[in-house]
Image (cartoon, rainbow, N blue to C red; front, side, top):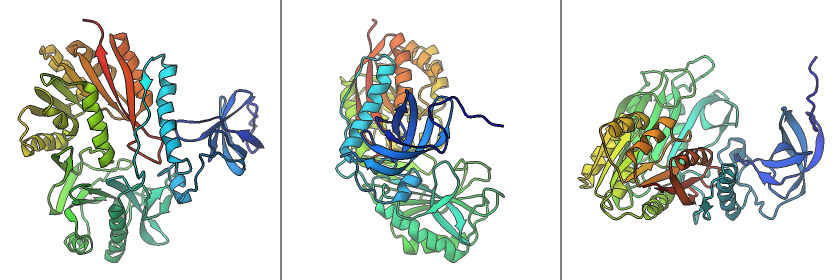
Length: 458
């Protein structure tokens, strides 16, 4: 027989709690005898009646059932589904308070890591909605019909929707039209339990400045019934489309994109602009999802680097070359490395497209290529890193230190791994004075930031 844990609260217990903080994932935090309880739908300063839903040895989770005292920072939500699915977990928090929360996230992590770095106020948006230039939505059978939507948090239950609140409204409109066409053509939705059905996901990208749209139909099977007729119907319904691609992913699991593609119509790339430069973007390439804030982020990065014009720059995790090429006119040369071959092809083509002759990009893992360059005696004045959420590999940091750049420009999408990596750099004599957060993902708990480290040892 299972016994209760020796904790101050028990599952299914109802009690009044006062939230004193927000967790990194946007849950209210209350404490009972210093025992943390993470509460859904509770903001700092609020008193709520909550039911304990889960108890672990060192923490518990609770669900708000009634509001006793609300926060002045609470605002009306647009739609409960955006919280259910995790699309907009901070939609109940006033936007200025969201910006402050993101600044404090980084400050708290720096404090724990004993890093004396100033965190500037988060740079936000005038309109923090409908900003995403890319959608990836699952397709599943609901009430006997293929249906688009988003999964409920911590589940694979589809919540049907075509209005996603934080996505470009023209992308949302295209998703609604695609749902109609999928049903019209009788294309079966993916059944992940039995690994059957055809259409797994729809991905749409839209150029913010060009208006060009790329539609990617991600299928389990190589065959897509009536694909030519479907492509013609898409073009008739969505006139901004310049590229229709079938991506084939026959694997089981949660990976969205496969490695095989078939162009059903149009170009292999979508074109957009950034800081006055043109960029071609393939379906498999990474491209920042918030175009207006990306320009703010990169401009701040270039300013923070305090460039003289004579620097040799290594652009690690270079993607399609957006940050490296944006920096190229301010430095002597740029050499980039990126793991995705399609992105490297885009990056070198984008250099040529913009008449940039002092930038070159190669395929490889940054943590493997940089040590090779260090062995070959390559010198760099500045290393730019924009890693995924897992941050930098220890091998990469070791190699970066061997190259001995004067500065490291760290663009981060995860404050926790940023703080960890800054500790490693600090141990090698690289320190930072300040971090600039930029709100790339309004209504969510995510925050991007720019930090410049300088070598303090000669």
